[in-house]
Length: 347
Image: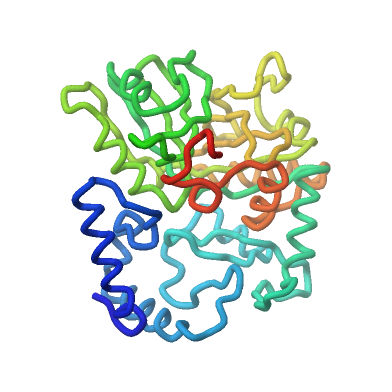
């Protein structure tokens, strides 16, 4: 339903929704009205009662940058959430995930002081940014959407959907887009080939259902290809910065040299007693690895990394620092810099 200001928009919204239904695709960027942005918990009575009441009340409030909701929080957590809270993380919420946006130093309350100017977290996030650029930083990226595709036709299916060539050797990854019939970018993600008939797709936190829907719509019904959402089964830690190799070399029982572990490689690793996978890829633009660890072993793996990282000045970094690093490197972000109206040529 629509109320208050929404009544003004109802005619236009009805028009574009009708066009969407008729043509099979939205006539413009309608992500804010796309049902695929929602998750089942967002339909619960408690969530709706709290969030709708707060949203309506915020209508005429100042819409500060990075303003967070206060209600319907603490729904989805990384397995190291309490470790990060102990380190004075200030959390924001995306798709229900409580993610560390920045970390406060000792003696400072990890709470936003909103402003249209430089906000209270700016200097702290700048230090995290600098750590990723000049030292080594750990980003909790567990909220990534993750999908497992397997079957004898999995490669053929992805070759049709992806704009890049994903028929690669097992143990390699490819950065690619999913494009619609107009050439617009429907998804921005990486694809790792684990075996001849098994692939791992990693995308952003907020687009889990959008990407699953796109896959379902584009897999031939006769194809021997099966998709599983494994988002909640794996934690992801990004170890980024010039000292990342030295730190990880002390922890992982594997050679991380350029020849043994080149950019774009994906290999099984041991992190203390935990087993997982490491991908040499970086969204911050510096040397780094993403570590994928089963959630039941994630805290153990984090403790191993945190202990080993002290001699290298390992610093925890939040989403604001990740965002500023990727902007500095000119890496686009789906939903802000690119979307279904932008083509790779435009991007």
